[in-house]
View 1 (spheres, rainbow, N blue to C red):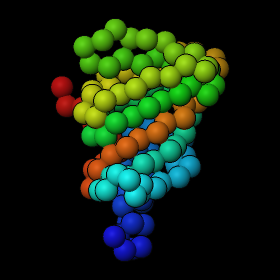
View 2 (view 1 turned 30 degrees about the vertical axis):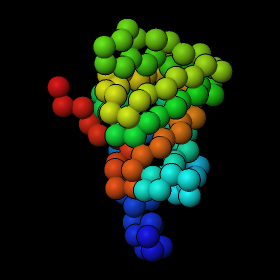
View 3 (view 1 turned 180 degrees about the horizontal axis):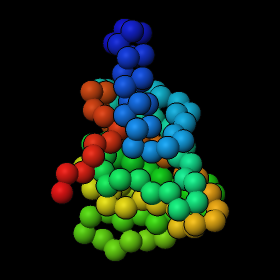
View 4 (view 1 turned 135 degrees about the vertical axis):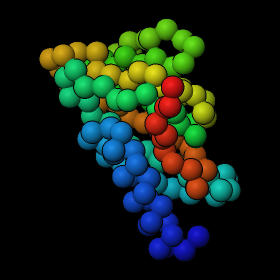
Length: 129
């Protein structure tokens, strides 16, 4: 993949994820040599008090870690779970993420997210019910 294609993919990935989440900051993107055709992305998501994301799915696998505050997460077929600072969860590729929201209406929350996806895949896709 040439540098122009890589930059175009990075911009598309960032804009697609940012449109679904406010205050998304991509920390790094890598093409791991031991995972041909895959892209690893590390980012943070800042949730303002009471802020929530629309339902969505991730074509790739996701690991999320709560850096600050508490976040309520619900995957399709499961009950909502409140994760506090220092806790984490995993979303297998293709899992529908019905709910992701700040558990507090007064305090911010922040996630560290790691995604492993195909180079031609989006970070997330809106969930069509």
